[in-house]
Length: 176
Image 1 (cartoon, rainbow, N blue to C red):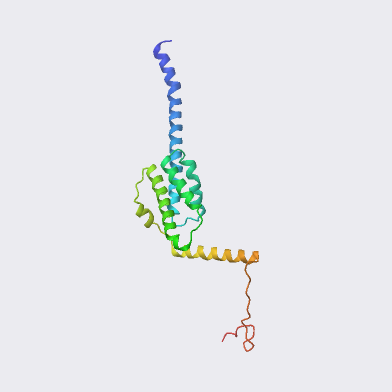
Image 2: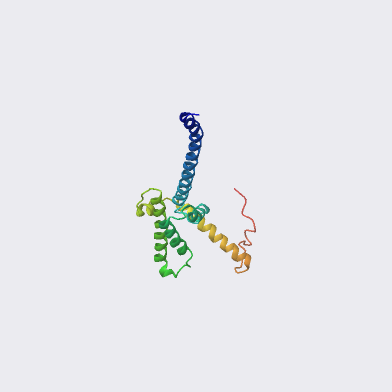
């Protein structure tokens, strides 16, 4: 066989094989970037509702998806460590929550920078939207769960009082 024939055979075998390998490499790289963008999107979407399962889930994936990215892992550790600090006395809570917010924004900014997004930290903090009704509803649900838990544990009594009067009876008057 001549050199041209050998080169043709090699090209027939190596060409498609290299195309498949290049495609697999690109798919893997794109998958990593897609997962990182999903984390950023979840954290951006839930930055005003940090108790949501989506927010917590995205936080818990940071270590896995950004493994080896020192700036992000450092910001992540600082934020997570701050989340584990018990709530200080009331007079120190403003500073405490400012530090927490700063650490979260540092993490968000580091992730965004890794993905070639550029955000202003002030915009990240001030340009998120969460309806007041959602906050109120969550607060009421939390308060009700706490009260029910205290009642079921026996730490709180259920107060019952009789609102009926003898002249009215136990039922409201009939409609007119």
